[in-house]
Image (cartoon, rainbow, N blue to C red):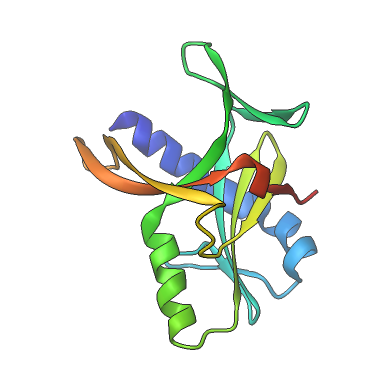
Length: 154
């Protein structure tokens, strides 16, 4: 659970630090949602943005490289986020929401994004078994976006 708490705090810190950068991309009116458990971290009249900070992921030579805590390096074919975010987006769209929904990954101070959609050739949904902040491992589904559908923002 200690690692989850550290990662969660790091993510919250990154959200605050990233706001000026993201306002340059999505507009000065982009706001950080004050609700701790909001589905999306930022919003304005036209965009909903979720930020995932991945300090150990680097983009080099056209691929995402990940270094594990014990120093093992690997190439990632996808980046992921929790399925409830896609489900929330789909519900909002079904109810007529016109906003564009983004998932961003901040990898080593560089921003990469994916515009959320339901194109099944761009992502897979897979189960994951890990501690999600409750002190024990549990199953949860994640959306793994294929690297070729993620683009650099800055």
